[in-house]
Length: 305
View 1 (tube, helix red, strand yellow):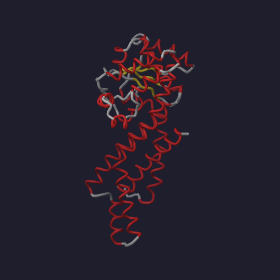
View 2: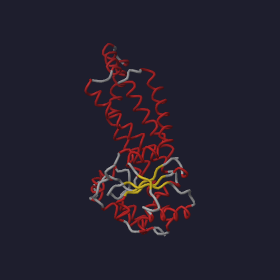
View 3: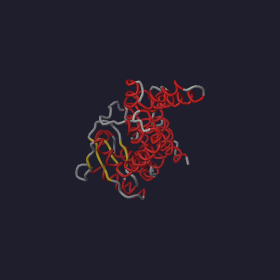
View 4: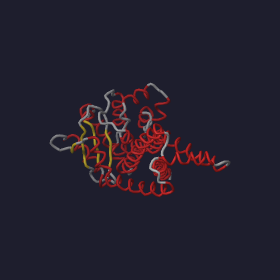
C-alpha cells in the first residue's frame, strides 16, 4: 500500500511539472492539464518498456562472459538456483568505483551490473553477498519501481530546473504574465486567485528538485533493508554482505558514470562525497540520501538469526 501511494505521488509529481511548464511557458492554457496527463502516461510507458536499455546505455556497460568473468557468472548461476528465479543478464561496467545495481521490468527481463572495481576488491563471499542483494531486488520487483521512478523523477527535475531558469530570466512565461496582468486589472478575490496561481506555480518549479529527491528516498530506503535480508537468505551468510557493505562504503573512489536519475538503484549511494558525510554522522546527508546509513544496514544483517 505504501509503495502504491509513493508511485502515485511520483506520477502526480511528474504530471505537475509538465503542467506547470505547459501552462506558464508554453501557453497551453486550460489544455495544460490534459497535456500533462497524456505526456506522463506516454513517458511512464516508454520508460517501462525500455528501462534496462536506458540505464545500461547511461553507464556504457558491457555483457559479462564466462571466459572473462568466470567467478561472477558462477556466483550468479548458483544464486539463481537457490533463489528460484530466472537467470538475469549480467553486465560489467568499466569503473574503478565499488558498486553494483539491478534493473529491468520483471524477473524474466532482469539485469545485474557490477563495476570492475568491485570485482577486483571483494573476495568470493563478499561478491556473492552483493550479487544476492541485487538478485533480491529483482525477485521483489524493486527494479521496475526504482528504475521507472528514478528516470521519471530525474527527467522531471532536469526539466523543472531548466524551466525555472527560463522563467526567472524572462520574467515569467506568457501565461504567467497574462495572469499577472489580469490580476492587476481585477479586484478582490479574482485578483488574489490569479496571483496565487502564479506564486504557487513558480514555487512548485523551484522546489521540485527537493521534492523529487524526497520521493526517491521514500521509495528506496525500506527496500534496501528488505533486499539485504532476502540476499542473506539466499546465501545463508549475512556476514559476507555486511563486510562487503563496509568495504564499499569505505571506498573514496567516485563513480565516473554517476547519474542522479539512477542513484537509488545502486547497492549504496554512488556519490563519494555523500558517503563521506554520512560516515561523519552529518544529519543532513542522512536525511537526503536515497539509501539508509550503511552502519544500520550492517547492524541489521549481523542481528539476523
